Image 1 (spheres, helix red, strand yellow):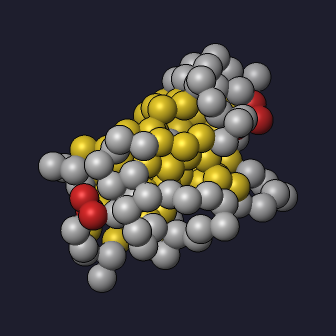
Image 2 (cartoon, rainbow, N blue to C red):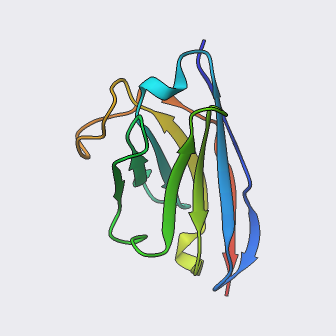
Length: 124
């Protein structure tokens, strides 16, 4: 059974930074692409970033490019999201997700496993 557990969320002032972590278990983490999504109050869940199985390829939503960095440590079965220059509009529940393949091919590709989410709140 695949389990994804996010951590690292919290309250931060605008301009600040947070690092989210996603600990994975249940299948061979290093074989699969991973991603981060977020859902703001009253809005649909949206793609934030994705990373290929080796970490060699990354993809970002335009809204976070240059501010967020996705990474992974396959030896630790953990994925990260470093978030810098946070804005109030980044406030959301952030979800870790795992894909069925080794690469992220685009928004039409849906993850098959999800974490429970971690709240990120950015105050102005």
